[in-house]
Image 1 (cartoon, rainbow, N blue to C red):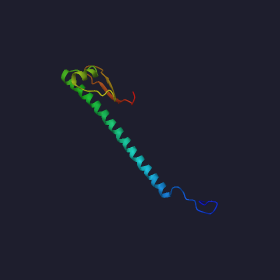
Image 2 (cartoon, rainbow, N blue to C red):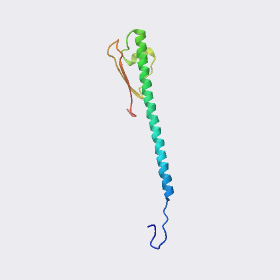
Image 3 (cartoon, rainbow, N blue to C red):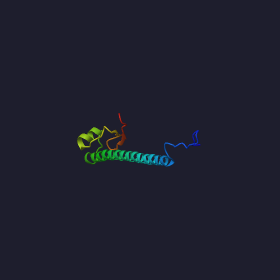
Image 4 (tube, rainbow, N blue to C red):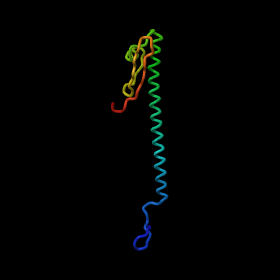
Length: 113
């Protein structure tokens, strides 16, 4: 089927070996990009956990020293030196009473928010 009207064989611009090499290269590149994305999401999850644990530890430290949980996050910032990364994370802090552990959650902010 690769013959022209004059009986000569047409030469394809690429060979089967070139196609296979290209497909393998694209598959390999896809695996690498997927791996980078997986590592990136894993790192963000770790950062979220570290941020949440830091706030929890500061709240428990406040309770141990003062006998009550802090009223809000700004209290922890001013009295216990905790630094909140509000550029990348959203902090949820809800206190139910001075002697009950507050609900603390940290969420990642989407880019551009």
